[in-house]
Amino acid sequence: QVQLVESGGGSVQAGGSLRLSCAGSGYTYGHNYVVGWFRQAPGKEREGVASIYIGGNKSSYADSVKGRFTISQDNAKNTVYLQMNVLKPEDSAMYYCAAAALSNVHMTALQALGVIPPQSAFVYWGQGTQVTVSS
Image (cartoon, helix red, strand yellow):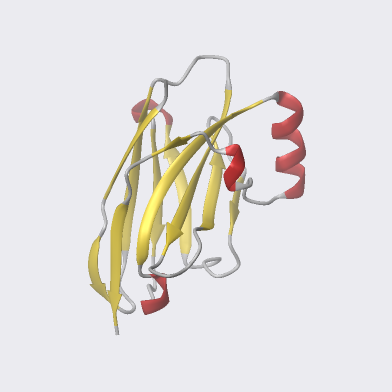
């Protein structure tokens, strides 16, 4: 059973930076995992922000955050990070990390598409961390 714990949220002014962390445990050796960051603002649907394949370097971003956010991983710590720079008020939301175990075929197909996997693929979710950006 994969468990995820997010941290690093907070309140910043526009133009500032935050780094979110997603500490994972319970990964099964030999499985293919992808970790994604999602966010949900009040009254809005949850949306994908970025994703990365565990043990690889393939990552994908939502257009709204490209060039400002960077997803990375520290395999030794089983932790995925989301570095958020040049934050905007519209980035304010609850941020969640999620993990999915993929088959080789599914992972290859998604990597080729270069998109964040659909939310329906993610089975394991963290509790979320709040990010608030003031203007």
